[in-house]
Picture (cartoon, helix red, strand yellow):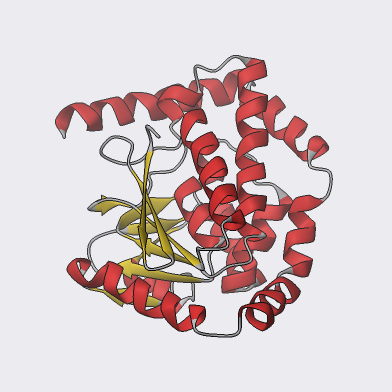
Amino acid sequence: MKTIQISIKDKLAIITLDRGRSNPINAEMVLELTFAIKEIKEDDGLEGLIITGKEGFFSAGIDLIEVCHYDQDQSKEFWSNFLALEIRLLTFKKPLVAAITGHSPAGGCVMALCCDYRVMAKGNFIIGLNEIPVGIIVPDAIFHLYSFWIGKHKAYQYLLEGKLLNVDEAFHDGLIDEITAPEDLLAAAEQKIRFYMKQNPITWQQSKMNFRKELSAHFQKDQSEALDKMLQQWWSPEIRLSLQKTIEKLNKATVKS
């Protein structure tokens, strides 16, 4: 694995996102995460999964610098695979906890939203979904995922605004469930997931799937029409210009850091 690390601790799997400083999501990371989650799901010796990042960043979201250079076929494959990854996370029956080590906008936030519980490090970090200002059409399924945790009213307003929340705001709105000091983050995530792991697995997992039945259905229905509309906008001249300006800012920020 080139973009993630996997460790095992007493029946608990831990996936650490490990791609550059900010863990931007590219095609390779999506495929590696999809494969790893499938393997962990099917391993009867593993009873839970924590997904975490590195100091300062859980994930900065989609790697616009790379993804914008994909051709049309590669772009369609990437976004299709990204949605498939979210389905795999949503239908992961075992306990799944996000240990959010720092910034987690856009795609990073989407991954965290698929988890059962989110612990976030205290600090000057942001989390949320800012796709619309970037020029990415938000699929209906993502709206339902966001509103599952924070309610339809806030999800509707925050998505249209591209609002990013600080740690305290995210906790207040129910986007995250717990705030800890960075050095205590993994311990807090492990404490919560081992509580889940102590429950009767059949009862716990079937109940989880029952609670997520309607939400999962939004992702599992045919997404081709929504994906085609998103890709049509993705390739429009005005959005390509907007994306190019965003990439220039990202490149400057990378140089400064």
